[in-house]
Image (tube, rainbow, N blue to C red; front, side, top):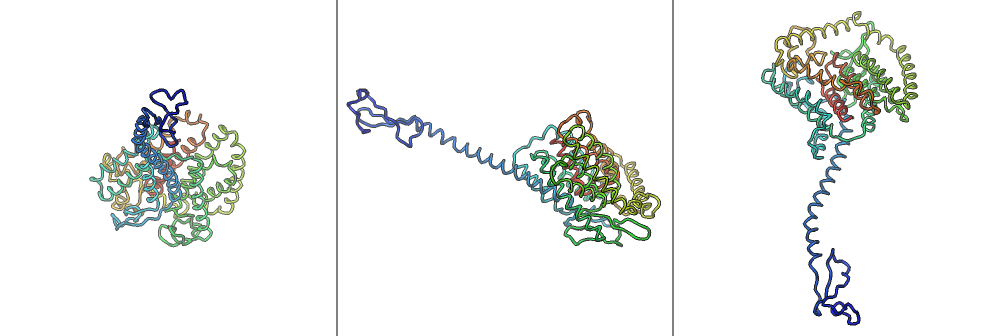
Length: 481
């Protein structure tokens, strides 16, 4: 009995008897008998009360951890979505063009499919509660911040201030996206597979367009039919032959994405079933007939492949097999497309190619004139097509085909210097970079250098939304690697 002590027990002669606590008691809570009455100690209840006060803290900590885990997962999947839709160039205008007489994609506020993914990535990273910028990302964040700040500060002096303000907002969005992407923790191999799978779809669409010699009617397709002004076609005698677009704005943009994809796909060559996909990207590069992408690939792919063979013995056999197959494919394509290749490489013998070179020369002259007139403030971010329209050049108004020159003309000489910083800084210590065992830093830097080479001959790595995204994603991945 709990109420009375057992007189037969020798321990019952004391003033109190302590019995085992019944099931359900907490901590040190116990029962005692004293003077024939049952009492309950308060020690256990005190500790229970302490745990009760701690429970909300533990619950809040658990909820925060769960929220951070969900946000991290969301950041990964939204990044996968971003790299899939990144090449798409279709957009929905939010109003009339800010400058009449210029192609709307250059001067019209609008929404791109990738804007949804950009917003989701930034939101997911904000929910992970990681406000600090990684140390490796700071060296590249400064020039990006500088470009956005220059675009903002020079907007009041721009030829079209409203257009400059809209462009500055776009540059700020790219800067924020960069800061978000450097905090997304995801394995490079997985995100590269998603990115390259998306590029393979673009290459397949480009192949179908070339075989059809016209648009396929796919939603988001921007390919122009033969006979339309500014259609990207190759002159072969008296006939014209359309180049591959995919779902990009122009074949040159498709070629740039394919060149980057070929470089980023090199570490994945030993994976089963990946080689056909890599060849498909190479076919997309060929059918784009982008000379700048061809040049960038020729300058960067062989040394990166040689470095992989040197540092990764397991890569030697896959690289050798890939090189042999690529050579065979190039010989076959060269025989089938010999007329098109000769046309693209005949820079002065055909009327179309001569006109292209003359037009680019006129745009370079306009850029140099703008720099001479406004070396500090420039003509305003995104305002170069307007400057070309107001000049006496015959070329259709668009940006000059050189990113450093373009930025120097739009936001001042400092803008061109900041771009060169962005382009060359990742490779400023090659002896450290090349000693790494991990292939991804070297491959990513090689892809970024290739895009920088393209930026010397074209403007889309910074002017078009898809090119900006490709540039910012590569820079963020370099910072993480």
